[in-house]
Length: 168
Image 1 (cartoon, helix red, strand yellow):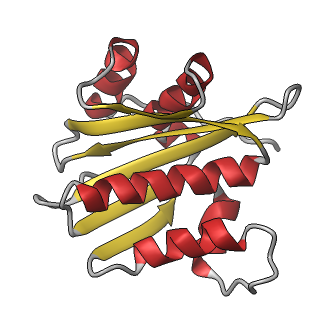
Image 2 (image 1 turned 90 degrees about the vertical axis):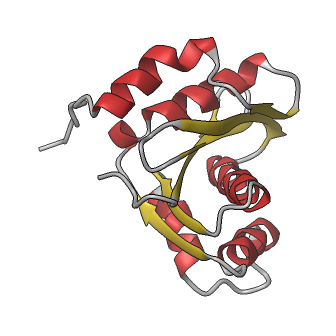
């Protein structure tokens, strides 16, 4: 379901290449019609999967705030990251700094909701995340829709159905 007019939807994803330990994240901002506003891929170096997810969330929220949006629907396919953002975290938690940075962004002077979605609903953010490994370390911002995303984004805007595999 599309957000209301004037609402920005942010989708992010994070990943880790297990064999090397490299992590990265990607995400995008869209308007209420599903149109591209901007996106990003960030090559984060080495770390854990949950670090990648949290950095993706941080950059997605930062971009929405910096773009002037004050009503944001934030979606992420990492249940564990969403749970960390919705629970109390002690300062001794190994990821306290990035979790706290994300929470501070969420509680800025704006209306920001955070929810979990399934991976199949997050294909564009996933494609941006996978692409981060082709870039040098650091943040790479896309003001226009990159060519490598055109088909994935068009299918997403059309509401193409993607099957969800469930273990029985």
